[in-house]
Image (cartoon, rainbow, N blue to C red; front, side):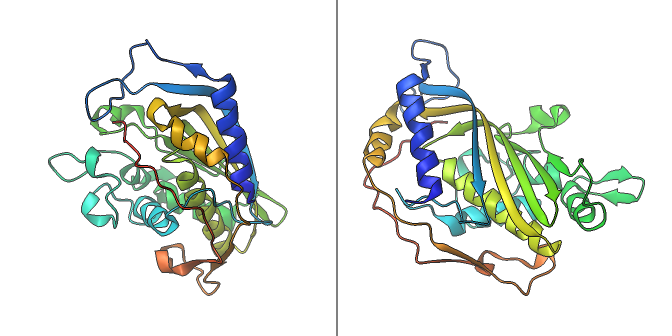
Length: 276
């Protein structure tokens, strides 16, 4: 069983056995039929993955990792909010009449800011510091821009990434305000584990630990049967993660720069309703 499977099971069991149900409370999300989408939740989850040991992808069900990487590159490389520039349709329901998701995600990363060394957007500043100031404790991004929240079609869920160099290893923390465990947990873990690998390689570093911090960690009521079924499964070993070692420029990576060798996963027979 992969480490990602183990942590997924631990977190989901804790939610189902010890979590708080918001049934009966006034909640924002709705199912497609208009009924409230209630959750079981726990607060303050911290999951740690040693990227030097294995890549954190689940095998209890398939994670469509290439689509996850494509979305990551859309946000971090293209710094885009236009759904026409994304290969998948995961953001279609959040698009406005202008074909964008508003001033969210990639838009925020692409805004340039003045530093004493010059003008940088958030991504390029991270790259600059990893190469020139690796001992810095200020290497981070934050896209939860309160000034622009009213123009975002969805407030950022995964909103902050902090990088820290220890010796020759790059560690990273993803802060997430909200996490839908069935639909998004491993999707986000895979994305930001890949990002950590990318940042390490272009900076001449080795990967260390990836830490995922989740404030509101929840399972939607209509997702509980699928989660319980997954908890009964015995996962497979994690696949081997392969990255094109010739790339030293962050903007040269594509979704085809990565491979998962011997990725085995269980079939998933549930239709997942989406809360919006």
